[in-house]
Image (cartoon, rainbow, N blue to C red; front, top):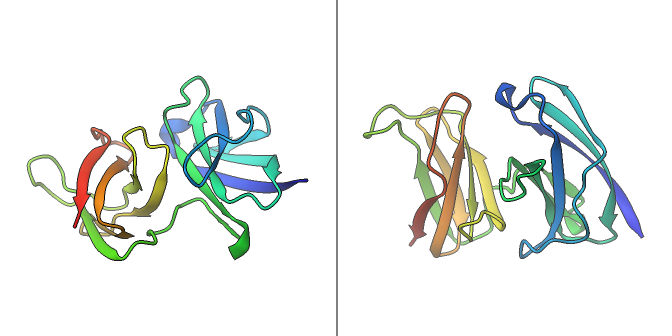
Length: 170
């Protein structure tokens, strides 16, 4: 039996007028069911709502949101954790044992970039998001990750980043 979840997705002014789609994924990033192409409502300023009625009972994983026609580009991700009784549009700061501080600076080691959205995946395609957060006034966001290779994705209105940034957690 499926259950229903409502998502609020804040993408910012640069994302107004978009047609969004979504894909339910399992904990390894694999697709579950067909793409979600209906149920989205834009409420202005790049803010959207999704009334999703197709979440499988007891599902653990998430929902990837992307612009219609561009399924490889993730604009938001919602974690689904039924055992914890919560849905979090940010993957959280991670569940690993190593503190990983990521600093985002303007090109050439310039000024810190505050309030940027940053998320981490285990794959170069960005399908398996394991943590996310927002940079502080010093351009820093702290994650808790397992040691190894990760891919860091950055987004902030008015800025252009080359994503992903390959990093090694030690």
